[in-house]
Image (cartoon, rainbow, N blue to C red):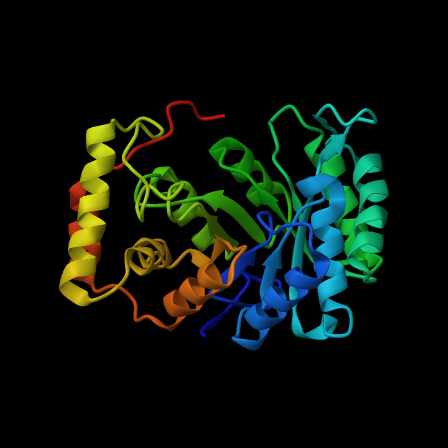
Length: 299
């Protein structure tokens, strides 16, 4: 397993990380799977207070009680479940963040969170107040670093300019190259780590039948998947390796966050981690298979 610096935070994280959102509700089974991942070199585990109404944090906390110092736990904040459970509301305020972190710490059974991420964000948010809350939590030792989870270039730019964020989580794949337009270079220039999610594009690059995706037609999606399969056939890589390694080829990307809920998916993730980087020729072939998409609206 390769390990990379998480921007300027001082944290080291595995190149392949564990997206916990898909985990089930069986804490004992989850503990076994999460420990297997850690034992095989995965150190970054990403969850959110939104997932399963907080139970996802609970299962991560139960799993790593006793092994807390071995893992980097990332969670997210900003969405509050309504009391009746009918949905959630965006509450990006200083006061809410300072309250929500206490609940996450309790569910995670820890006294600190390694990476606390704003789970979204708009230009209309009280950004300075959000930053003040994150900075206060760092001073208090309740979090070690903070970041945002966003695909909005204008929002990302504001946090880069106005805060000391350590990371940005964003969707990035062969079928979603929008981050290449401006965000990846911007973040690399400012030593802000990129945590890439959605490497498989909902499975369309790996094993799912082609369909319209973002602004791509079904035919274009099929072309991209065929290119992945071509690299797979000529190099004996799996399609999952090709898709994830395409994401990791960009120097701005620190870790690919893969959703894992089964032992087979964990095995695939470990195989990706052990695989060699794509060659420049393989990357170029994939890039030429489909025209890059761009943001239709810079929000």
